[in-house]
Length: 550
Image 1 (cartoon, rainbow, N blue to C red):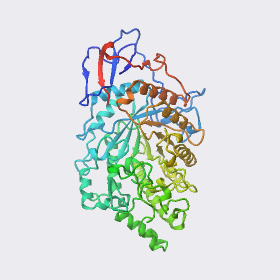
Image 2 (image 1 turned 90 degrees about the horizontal axis):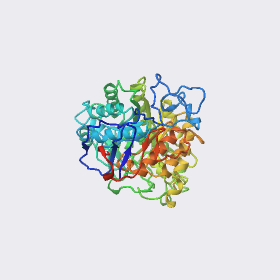
Image 3 (image 1 turned 90 degrees about the vertical axis):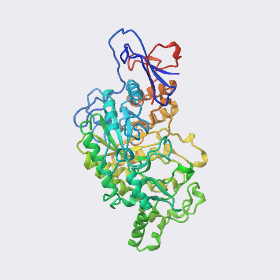
Image 4 (image 1 turned 135 degrees about the vertical axis):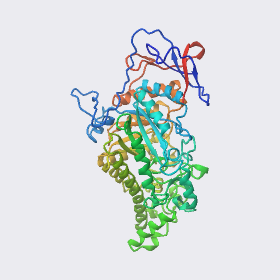
């Protein structure tokens, strides 16, 4: 089965009849049918391209009077979320291995064909991880951006926009990780000399995903602090791509932890350490975190409270009621529990503050938005303690809003809060896990509204069904709290381009462009994308060009 893009003239040169295949030899294909031109090529996207900050503007759909807007269709810094008819641009995440270990763009011909298809569907742009472990792998301050430069030019050629993630974490060991990209070798060498550079749990298990925030202000990376290393990396990016920032590159998402999220690695999947819906474990046993905890305890005259995380907080795969700390009337709600959780979550907030302050100074005036990602930890949300959120560093309980301080911190720096699990419904979750992704999303929407911070969204898991897209449409509106300023779909792969999956994406993109109003895409749609999506037999189609999907 293949996906066909038909228009009044071919997208490509008719003389080019070669089939483009990748080493993976994927079975999914994009086929461009040879058709006699009946009129000039006319392809209208249902979504207009995002405009340059402070320079270009776009027109709000459904309004009689023109209203000049900024990136993501927002009037002013935070104005549009209150408008239920606001256009919500859709981006699509590129594969994790878009740039190879050697620093080159992976499968460029297949990428080119895929970007062409996304553009035809009305997608605003794509998102890519700029891996620290790839770009600076040859040594401190030795950066190789060439693979990303090739991608930027290709994205520009197709009239798309680009979100770039400053990925200071490793790839591998978490949900959806399809490849392995460790931290830079010279960083791993320093970690091998001093394992306390990385997060550590009670049993002494080290996690190499991300450098411990306890080291933020220490020159542990060959004379530089981690924050200085991250800032140098972002500064190098700015200089290399200064001609594209604010134009093609519209957003910089600043990585602040594992999976690029502002959190502790409390639920690592590698080696079966954690399984859903376990509560996870506190990650504060490296010597730098322990020293901070001890100092904080002594400062209030409670020396004994600084010996470590709560001893009765259980292990990765337990449930709240199995522990003394997290159970309904557990010690999480005592004076000691409050002290520890305020310290633990406060350290995470301070870490985010340091990185975002550096990023703001570097990218200010470039025209590119800044964003930061927060994890959608929805399991045990219906319990009083919200144990899984607490171990991740979000001090959110039945009595306390843990997301408002995060939203305020991001809002103070003009940073978009990017939140996950937008596609999830409560009824889809197992009863014993006490999940409420919908309740969690509502809370975050209200927190960002109160903090006057922009909110963007992602889906947490790969979903292709209409139910998931419908849920995103519902959460994108501002019926309660902030609406979404943008949505990034996870993730581009060959399954996305299969018949029904592709149809659902196209319908979704159009509906998001029309303020969430549901629409149905007919098989042929000459008025908009001139896109035909269907199941066809390859032997009955005269192929001009085939491109294996990324």
